[in-house]
Length: 390
Ligand code: 13P
Ligand code: SF4
Image (cartoon, rainbow, N blue to C red; front, side, top):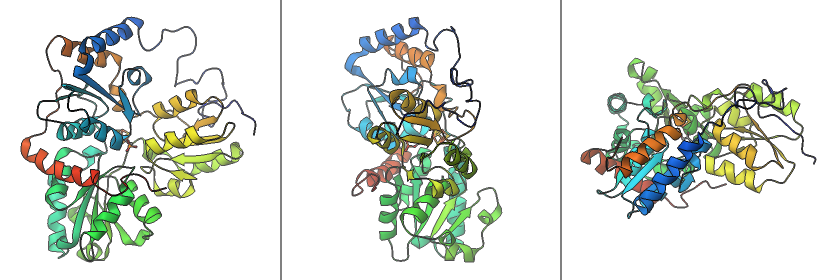
């Protein structure tokens, strides 16, 4: 197969192949990372030496990834954070729920820093503890709560993880959702799962991986009385999906998959399981960010890929594999705005503050929440096989 010089957004403004407008500035404009700042980041990292361990999620900007000691998806980063007990500071280049998990998994003397406190996650914000407790009460009223095992995606606040720990449940990530659901179904006779907060990951795993049907799943809408469900629907369901979603992955559409298949001969569609079910059904391969990277690394030269995940990662893969045709699965640019909050200025500020002896933006989880969230996280880390089964 010959390599075609595709733009990153082939259905968008990509007819201009020399500049991907909206993605990068064309012409002689300065690089996003001022060389002075790059030097300051390097100097601060050198001054801190082994006292600091920098974690970078795959959706981070290149200018930040350049300073990460390790990169990974949320599962790998949780494991990596726990494996560095000697580092005094963990600088987490990712979003708030990841930094919380790192604080829970690290020792009491280790300090976790999030370079910008505004780096939250809209999906995690879609499930609040009080709302989840209301849903639990409704399950009790329907007479089924004793068979429910709560499973929360890593992309949730520490108090939701603690809720799962307290109630016999587990945390999962996009790399191990199938193993986590298998584990949950084995915990009780006639088990049902309350899956928080991403309805798409829950549905895609239950239906595509575990052979359940769409009718086995119902959606609990926290903004409606009784979740918008009858007690009978709660009793009949195998999986109760929380009505949350990722604002980035929720954008990918089946129509664009069709357009790309018609435009790029032999294109492989590779998507993250946070995408809508209709997109996942049309995809060739589905998996976490780590799986997406491994798939592209193993792909033959000349093969074509349309990738449905965050744009920083897709761009990085396209740049790292010029022998493969890699495009974004959307017509328009869409970064995760909160992941992007961590930029080089914030990183330098955090690192220089540490050098100067102050700990900025420390993320701490209160002891009671930490205790139960750790139970749910440790159950996840102990799952057999642990990662994607494909
Ligand atoms: P993973 O890191 O588990 O692939 O999840 C992607 C994501 O949306 C993180 O916020
Ligand atoms: Fe949250 Fe989606 Fe951004 Fe991940 S990509 S941090 S799930 S909004």
